[in-house]
Structure formats: structure tokens, C-alpha cells
Image (cartoon, rainbow, N blue to C red; front, side, top):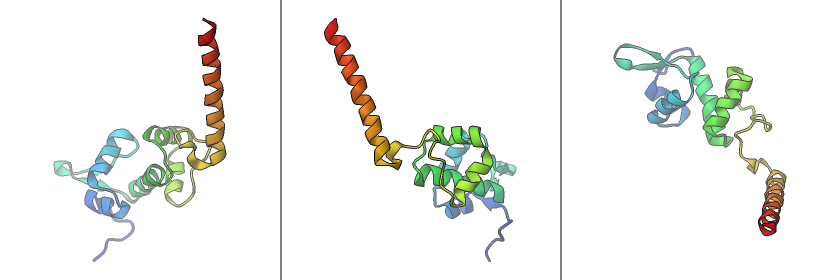
Length: 130
């Protein structure tokens, strides 16, 4: 018998639903203060439906969109939990948000490469003048 959509999930059920190992959920709890499952006797974790929605967003941003942990933390700080929940619902992440790799487009990579080459040329010129 399957649980209803409003039922709490154990860590194993949450991990199965999100397709991540249980230890990843416990790790995310240490990195993201906004992930706080309810804990019962013996430290058993129970995830509310709202917790699952946030975790789904975090998973999508980290695994599918290529965000770093610091990038997701910054996104939460700047745009709040609603932004993380919406990311889990299938909406893409804000491309302007830091923490996302430049691989979103080749133009961004080429621009970064040009900036680095310019900086290297300036450094080389400074070193030659001394």
C-alpha cells in the first residue's frame, strides 16, 4: 500500500523518491540549514511533503543544473525557499545566479577565456618590465 502525497516520508523513502543515497540526504542537512526534517525518538528522520519539495529542488540544482553547494546556498539566501521549490518543479535555474558553471553556453566560456588571456598578457608584460 503506497503512502498518500501528504504523508511523511522516512529517510529511505525520501532517498528512493529523490534517487539519491540516504547518506547524501544526511550530508545535505549539514550543508543546508533550511533542510530540517522532523526527528523522532532515536533520531529517526521524517520528511514532510514540503521538505521533499525543497530536496527535489536542491537535487535538481546540484545534479542536473550543475550548481555547487555554495551556489545553492547563495540562491537560497538571495531568492528564498520558493526558488528552490520551483527549481524542483521543473523550472530552470536563474542563469544570472552565481555558482552555476559557465558551461551554460559556449559564448560565456569563450568570453572567460578571452578575459584570462588578456590578464595573462598583462602579467607577462609586468614581469618582463622588471
